Length: 233
Image (cartoon, rainbow, N blue to C red; front, side, top):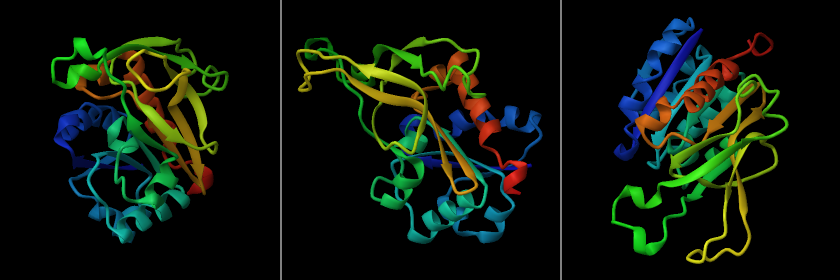
């Protein structure tokens, strides 16, 4: 099995350090791992044809038309595609083809009460809960896990119903926010794209979140589940 780790984009999500956390797991799981600091690899048909799993950590940034076309074609042919937080759910905002592939786009992360803000990233660190769906309690990625809580960025995600949602998080009504009813966002989901599997987990802003037992379990199981299956080989 061959895994391709693609990392870059906004440095605030520490793409190198974050992906390094999972390289030993991939190797121990039997993957031959290739690391790329550019999405240009997506346009290399020979590399993509032999790749069983893509792990992407590229926040924001941009992607060329032939690169996203290569990524979509590889996933449709059976290559798994996965990642966490902004590295997959806030990538390539200007590419509608990429957004359709992934099935969810970061919109915002609500913040603290204005008087409690200090002007750094912690202004958006809120205590919140992740709740497994009925599907999530049975799915191989999340089976055996319970609902859990984190204090970090809580992603508000725009999404569609092709996703199979394994866990959700709810944004409550607060007097300093303009919405007037609770908003439920998908937090972990899978998506079938042709013969390929897509897995997205929205927690993962920082290394401490990625090391949290539930988050790390979801990411690692997601890698194994997304990887090319025998039926797609």
